[in-house]
Structure formats: C-alpha cells, structure tokens
Length: 218
Image (cartoon, rainbow, N blue to C red):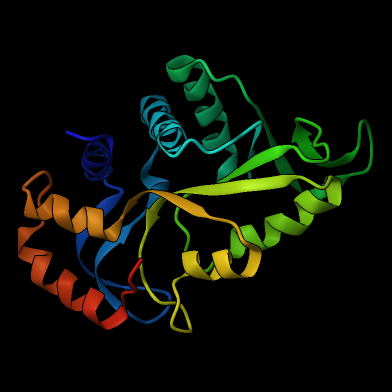
C-alpha cells in the first residue's frame, strides 16, 4: 500500500472522510465530506504529521521553516517538523502567527523562528476550500521578511471549481506562483474506492457525477 492509499484509509478510520449526502457551505450537495476536526488524539496527530512529512520528502520541496497559520495550522506544523526529524533526519524550524500582534514582552506577529530574507518557507494547512489561508498568510510572511514560499502542503485537493473555472489550488498558483502539494487528491480517493482499499463503492457513481459537474482537471 502506498502512503497515499494508507492516508486515505487513515482518514476513513479517523472519521475524517465520510460518505453520504452533505450540503456544503457553497450550497452544493456532495456525496462525501472531509472534516479534519475529527483528528483528536496524540497518536492521530503524530501519524498525520508523518503523512505531511512524507509528502514534503516525496516532492523534494526545499524547506528551512514550516509556517502553520493560526489556529488549525499550528499543530500541523509542529507535528510535521517532528516527523521530518524523526523519519527523514531533516531538522527544520517552525513558526506560526498570532491573530493579533503582541504589544508586550518580545512583541511581534510570529511565534517560533524569526524569519529572514530568502528563507525557504512551506505553508502547512488542512483542506483548501477557497485559498483564504494562503491569501491571508502571504502578506503576513512578506511583512516579516522577503521569504521564499516554496510551496503549500494540504491534506486533500478536492479538484473542485471555485467561483470560476479553476480550483482553489489552481487559483493560488496563478495568483501567487505558489504550488500546492496535496497529500492526496479526489482522484486518488476515487481510485482507492475502486480498488476496495476503503469502503464507499455504493457512492462511486454519485462521486463521479459530482466530479463531472463541479470538478476540474489537473
């Protein structure tokens, strides 16, 4: 089993990936739902960090610091830097932002590594829906230093159109020149169902119809 197939099974086991009929915030009715809030234990978070680390290592993304946007990105960045060190012997920094800049003590907008010009930074987040996390993170990072954002790593690329013809992943690539690396895509999930790696065969036709209506290629 590849790490991608293992991750899809992990999502199902944790109740993060479920199948049925779900009305999304967009009003679309989807045959699947991804709720990353269902990662709740230390063991789950440790494994999740390993999958992020595997994705970074698999794509050979240059990195000196992982940035986790507050709040959901903070435990993701921490678990991933630990996994990079433990599994691959790659020791990198991490930092995260405050929702409001601290005006006492050491002050500032960031906690962790102090960013410097040309530092190679990867942004870590869960599921990209609209690209909001990256759009909010880029000006914060650039205000701290002229960093080089070498990529963004997320759990799942829905491969689904936003308001236009592109997906959120494609939009941020076009707007910021930042490549988004998902651990898995919806295409991967569909193939895992077809292969019997995870349940959901009864939802396969509706998932394919949903992709036909709302999906994008690439």
